[in-house]
Image (cartoon, rainbow over all chains, first blue to last red; front, side, top):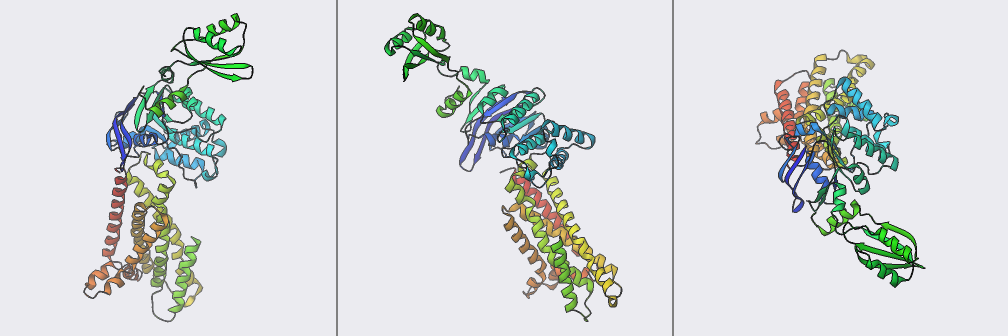
Length: 312
Length: 219
């Protein structure tokens, strides 16, 4: 669906996007991550035909974004980051206008606008002036607008920013329900959300792709295995010795918490040492109150690849 | 709208009172006052056309919709011209109101009114295309309005400016002077040359505007 080859974009002397290449297949939901200023918005603007590239080639559904920009624009729904809307217009009026602009007319337009007002929960404000709406409603109106012409590709720049938890859940489900019929490329800073919605994650930093895989695989590729934490009430040195004897534990860090000792065990990759730790504690009659395997998540991956620029 | 009607109406009235007794055409006074205030109206209407879109970011929504640059420019232009026409139309009625109130005026020359309407429309069409181009090329609304107003006033008084230089041919002056055209048309004498001048001028401005908008995609 999206094919980006050696995309480069300069703003004067600064290099915003540096030789970026990636592909998104039909029906995929792809999360587009990166720290602020990494080039996410610029890439999305190029994909949506708003900005031209300095170099490289981008095709969407087989059409070049520069040469066949009109064909591309017919096939995409784009929601910019700050959701610019005409604040003097009314909600329904605006949606009608956008639907006409995107080539809908007659019964089809009426039906789609009605559907969009329903799906995005805008019915109760359909007669309100946009300028007086809350951020959440504006966000939903922007989303309704980007969906109104049933685009093949949705490009969403931080779609859930400014929404309350209920609305986020609603929008998340809405995006999930779009999968398979539509292709979605969304950027977000809320990583658990990306982990939940997206089948694949692209992480870019300083204009280059630093990671591209499923959230699960990315977490798996992390350096080192998860850390195991045990809280045990017992003589510190003995516990430490005991822990170090267990196969798979590389090092142990002790933190004291009153009578209790908190032992942070760095383990070998794929090693699960929890049963051994429990067996040891019970055989020595030490009391244990916590034993957890600390799970690495997308956030750790994000921090690692965007701070060290390590390629995965 | 109310402001425009009061302003142009009172200018007309002042003109009528000042020229009472002399044999100046009423239609001349009417359309001169309308065109005077039109310059301000057009500057204000046109200043927002593109600068506001850029400032609020809605240009991003507009240009990522499947519409061509030509459609955007013509759509904005048509909307703005229609808006101004709606505001201006009632002002033309002033002359009939005056005639109804003052029986000594006698019959209004309809031909002259039609001529005046034609030149008013032409001036609106041309000035709006200029205002649209200015709005597209400036970043700030106020800057756009002032630039547009200056350009329109230069055009309006081009005749007077050029005639200050004696080496300029008088024919060229007559051809370019907007106020002279307004005067001529609102006497009922319709000349095809100004019509062509304004229409081709508007077309050129709009064409340039489309190119300027297209060029923004390249940067």
